[in-house]
Length: 315
Image (cartoon, rainbow, N blue to C red; front, side):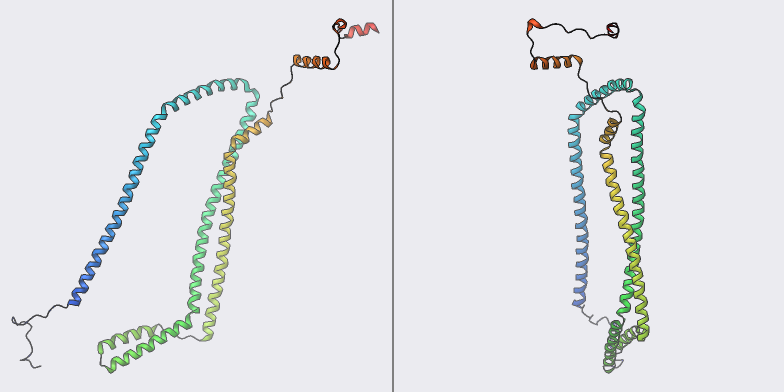
């Protein structure tokens, strides 16, 4: 086209090119997607806010119900506590006056029991701290194992990955040849850049080198697995020990009162009540009357038991 026939871009009478409807459609679709995303975010925020409101309403209702119930109980509870305090004061004065020399051994027994419970609590804390550390080490060992597994998988997949790269390069070569034939300079330039990137990351190693890499990565993987197994076993051992210790400590705390009472009763048993002399005599008389009844005319009072002096005179 000659200079005289070429359109002047600044010609006021030139008709502007109409807008591309496809570009406008794409733009509208993008705007719609953005609005939908914003509405979705607002909907999620509204749902979360409504959930918070529901929880707060439930909490307010629970507080009101609790206070109402407690208001009807508090006077009776205060009366009960006052009565129990009065009972304690009376019995405490009585038992302190009566306990005597039993107080020291009983106090020592309680103190030793509670001290042993405290030692068990400290041991449980140590176990839990060791367990937390062991679990962290186990997780780290598992992460190392995962990394070594990925490295081994990568080396193992090297032949297939390399073949995939060669196939891709061959496809790019075909595309470049087609671009050259069609004199499509822009497409050819892009395909050549892609060819260069793919070619720079494609390497062929010998079979011997691949064997060495596989053996090395497999050995590292097995070492990582063994290390992870040991760490996991230690964590499991501590978990079991902690659970057992926790159960023992809980049982000890739950049965504290009953256990101490049994020990105290074993230390100071209550003597069995002895039958009184009156009841014994009554029992003997009743038995004698039943087995050998005596006529009233022949009954005589029993003679007194001889004393030591009368026995001496008789001699």
